[in-house]
Image (cartoon, rainbow, N blue to C red; front, side, top):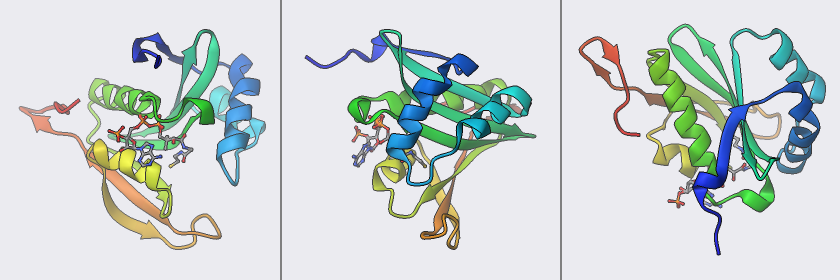
Length: 162
Ligand SMILES: CC(C)(COP(=O)(O)OP(=O)(O)OC[C@H]1O[C@@H](n2cnc3c(N)ncnc32)[C@H](O)[C@@H]1OP(=O)(O)O)[C@@H](O)C(=O)NCCC(=O)NCCS
């Protein structure tokens, strides 16, 4: 039997989560961030919002974003390999759309490896469109810049799709 998505709980990432978070980071990214980068983000970056997803007390996914004026920039999103394809990436994206609505942001942007088709499909499903590219951004590969524009209604900037 599959896991009910309601069993996944979204929470803020805390420093004590970093050992579990780093296990995922090191298993899904070719060039993982170091624990010090995450510590710096959590301790000193006032623009940063990091969320995680817990399942039965275990951290199984996380995502981060910077809020810069009226734009939200997603810095990372990663799901434990055993938990991919179960709607957790979608759950985290919904959280970022919720944050965008709360802060009345106009758009959400991110960079994605050109060949990362699972991630590109996920973002496209949420209305992100390719707006440009950064050549050799990852050294070995280019990044696509993808943006989702939030709908604006009567001066209330709001996305009504999700
Ligand atoms: C990309 C990633 C975040 C997707 O998260 P996920 O929890 O597996 O995604 P979901 O289960 O919410 O799937 C949502 C949509 O994403 C797309 N998707 C997810 N996995 C996919 C795959 N293996 N192949 C193609 N599309 C895929 C589909 O469009 C899917 O919608 P559908 O179920 O209606 O087909 C996850 O695979 C991951 O952590 N990858 C490694 C790290 C990474 O690449 N992060 C992104 C950096 S930009």
